[in-house]
View (tube, chains in turn green, cyan):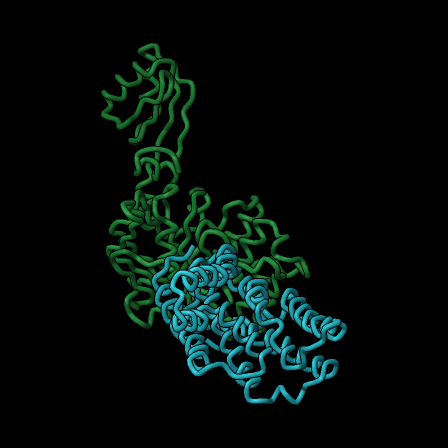
Length: 302
Length: 249
């Protein structure tokens, strides 16, 4: 598999605090790589290092096959776009003036300006200055900035933070079209895991500066367990019946349990009925990315 | 780096602050000449009007080019330049060149307005091309570049509005400590050295020298431009080496 970004034992220490400690990630070409982790897990630190804004304490990374220690790393970055934390825009300029400034910095003519503004939905902002933009508009302008050099890959740090539902859908559609139509590789970190699960084809899970696991969306799909949630009058009786059936289950409360293994409904309900236990409700559900991640890191808090 | 220069100069050109400051410098230079014309003890002529704004250059530098420079860091737009592949050396040098250009432009505007208005209203225009006048004009340009080098260095190290403030007061602080050192040491050579090395002291000497209508002694004559050149060359080298290692926000 061809990787756009690879890191090898990447470490970043701030005095005694280890923001990153031996991080290895592999972002396949053409993928949307969801970077998942709690606050302070090291997501932004890694993105800042990949973007060249910060330097690693130890370890190295490769961008488009060029090592971070190589002098050509600047050239490798020339086909990369990134929005790190807050969008980096000129607040005292209009959207068009902002994009023109980036065109100048990249030595490009201004022919792309209208197209990019249209793509991110900012073509009708006229003379409104960026400092008067809503958070969503600033985010989109930040993405527009990163698209000026027609990047092969895009790094986005929490791009949907603060966006309204309409804005989230627009950004999602934009990213999907960039990936599908232009074949752009996208590394995206987000706290909104439900949203990320609608986009990502690959995932990297980071916790306390360590990569816990890298998985494809298909692997996650397999790993996220199907389960049946059952509400009964007495979970004590339910446990006995499920044990007799060798089922994999977890009691949630005195009246609720989750059953992970496959089972036939009728024998279970009949067995419970015989023992005087009433079945209130049965519902099938699928473990979400959020639950999967929380189970992986062992607690809530993202 | 030409791309960064194009981006930076466009920012300067579109900045209202830049044009307001240019107009202010021209107006202030003219005002000094007019005040001199109507002063009861009229003794200054055109050459003395050339450098009336020299001591105010650090203030103008702080208001326009330094603010434009640090805004690149406060608004984090410097990230865009790094992300799309510009080297940190290129970014530092582009900032320095743009800063130098703005500072030299302001100095030239103040000299042109002061010199022309002075020649018309006060006379003595022919003295502007005298040897001592040309010497001090040359030294003043180097001094402006030295101030610019120092301001860019501090702003690129501090990378915030506080950098602008520190850069503005730094030379005054140095001059203050220099004055104290001179008072304590009381050695003629040390005084000469300090007045070359400390930019604010050098600025005073250049303005005074222009008023005295004569070249300085040989130590200062060579010492002042050499000291300015040292600032112009050494500070960017240190600044670039520091900036290349720095983690940005």
